[in-house]
Image (cartoon, rainbow, N blue to C red):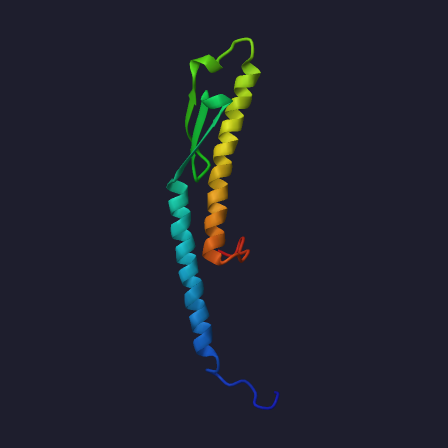
Length: 114
């Protein structure tokens, strides 16, 4: 063993402090995740004729289609507007989750750690 060797207790306080900080960060992340899952996000397309509302769990909660959006001759446009509204609402949810995570972790990339 190198001169001086391993001395138990040296730096132990710092390690405990780091463990406590990590546990607090994990609790904060879990609380934030729960809040984001319950939050709702909305997006519209076609000048407001299609509106999608989703939650942070990526579940579609509501889809509203104005009667003027329904053209039997152009169902494909309606389908595209629906897909666009749902995707934009989900992007809003993901963006907010990412911003909150970055704020919580100070910009550290901790994907998969917690």
